[in-house]
Image (cartoon, rainbow, N blue to C red; front, side):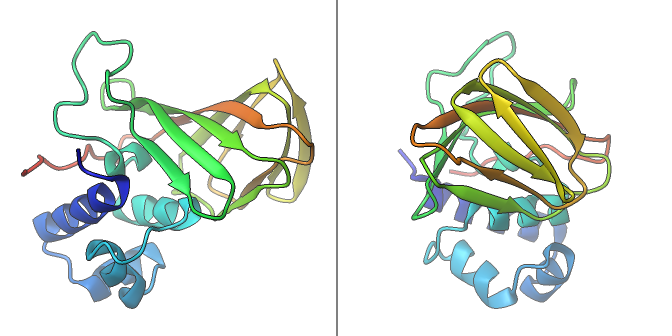
Length: 195
């Protein structure tokens, strides 16, 4: 089975080559340095969630495009047998793809875990991206464009994600939440896989 770092490397390179983008051009569109993009493509570096979001937004693809495996999406399936997981090294965040991007419905959904004291800063996503966050365990401190929100289990919020936002676990127990991300029509599906 291909590891997440290798999957991200393969997907980034595939999308970039399919579009005929150089590393320099990709860096201009994503705000991620050419050197970092090269390291990610070679599998020498595993990007943070924030960096992967910048790449996905700049390339106008869904975040889950970097986690999918060949044949992982089957029409009618509620969940796949193999669920891709992205674990941010040292960041205390775990992202599990519950439903990968579905072009007909224009959304993807994740289960996100934050260990105690973990914080994840997210740069603005592309215009039109909307997040729906529903806490299922613990207490989440969410900041959206400078506005603070404290969400307990059973509470949720919807917000335009084209502004800075961050997730923080202020407690001593794990925080778990669902994050449904809705994309505008420009979002593309991941490229055809070549194994």
